[in-house]
Image (cartoon, rainbow, N blue to C red; front, side, top):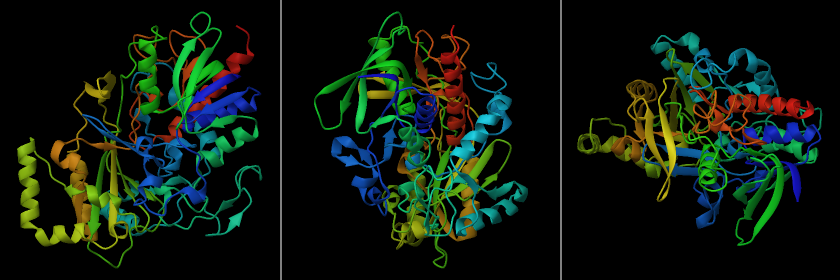
Length: 519
């Protein structure tokens, strides 16, 4: 089998590339290690671990992936549609600082150049302003007033169809060419999979249209190896793949190959290939990994009159200062899995100090702790806060004895102890009569959790500075590209999905233009 383009991954980079290349008349194969989901396949709540978590070794074939490293815990997606299946739909454009920092800053006038692609990406993803606030959004509004940031508080732009609630209609986005949709029910289920066909996941727009134009998608399949043909891939690549649950390998030929597996897919594959068949790859693979400098804090409320699970996953945002943003995140009613992984929010210079403060909290406030751990419906009573910053520090990923490992590359290590985030969480907790909690990995070891790992195959002026050029072409090889979150070369400080989509739109346009113009 031979294809003009083989794409590894079906997330925001891979789906965009598939549509644009298939529309231009090229044969396209998309290889996705996760499974294909319909609305009925999603779990009602996150207690259904086999449907929610992606752990194929344990036969958990869900779409939510948790990876733990020395410096970060990473939350990611898996499945046809990639991270769009599990993300919170939020589509902001980063502040100006993003476009003039990082390894890409001198390669183009990024804000100006990406403006039309942001517009296209926003339209394709079906972006609309959230029309309804839930209790958590209202509480964030009160917090904004308390800290003097009322003018910086506003509803989010999200990829959701806000038609008549619960009513099915013909495709409202692509002149009827897309699938049937249903108006959002504001159930808070965006991040456990939208069971009501309202969330604008990639399998309902980019990837759906790509398949209609002839693109092929292989799910439950992963790339295991790739061998260049001709001079540094000038004749394409021989790609070996393996189907989940089988021992046999299949081989296809790709005239061009695109890495779109996200940081946890693309970077380890590039590191592996550099050791085997692509030794000419840049030594910068794995460098420039960023986490959006995030903090995730759950605030469990004692106010039983409010239901914090109502609304969309993230319905509002406040810019707390020039570097920072805060958003309330919700899960659907009954989704209380995270209660098993919560500890009091503390900080301290070392482990013994933090253990002492956790024990003190448990002893001094026994009733409060019992209430939050045994509250009846955790999702109804809990508002998760997502804090993000544009302040920059980077990690590097490399291959270790037991898989990927991290080390601090530039700046200080990512920390779970961000003073601004903890102070905002305490203020928010006072508003909703709540108690802040975090993952034990944060309280005990200071390891932060991120849902937005980026970088590792960054842009640069050459292989000494980056893995790819400004048009996403891999240095050192022909017909090889990286188009996904690992190509993000600065810290956006906000949810990055729209930016990945806009960059993919630009990369695909450049690629098609180059192919149609003889060198």
